[in-house]
Length: 216
Image 1 (cartoon, rainbow, N blue to C red):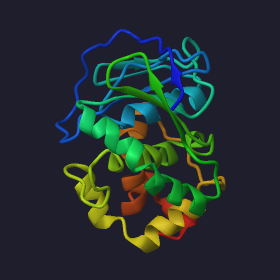
Image 2: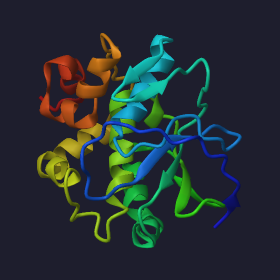
Image 3: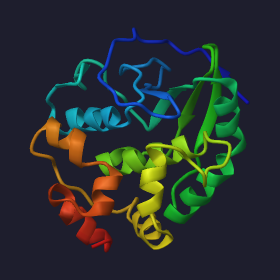
């Protein structure tokens, strides 16, 4: 596996709920510099997409980001793992993600080792980073493959898995390369109601996306 030198960003305190598997995600630019604060709540990644599209900064639950100041260019993240087991799991379970990328018709994710402890960098198709719900789904898969068995996740991924039927997954994957997007009213709405699970449930804020995908 190729290894790269990763430039880390200063970590700040964020208001985040408990998660069984505490993996911290951060956007990384093409120079392999982290440009967003590492966070276990994946909704913060969507906030960065909101900032990019709206051209406005976000400031929510301690997370601050302005695309104008520290832009990301591609679908690229650093993942800081809590232990070597979850680190190895992602590498070993990569075929699980590749199978779904093939269904979506997008290029396969590449994984790189870094000079930082328990940290990998992943590079996926830019289709995943074209919308908030898409990056939410992509990083959900990254969380799944970090478990020993991707089909047996723990909270909160287990909650999502219970509603994510094979039929609905197929419809979402089919929509990855299509323009199925709605612009949130503000970043609070983007953070709380624009993830893939909100689309899956057909929440009012994203019902147009759910309808276009044929989920509701």
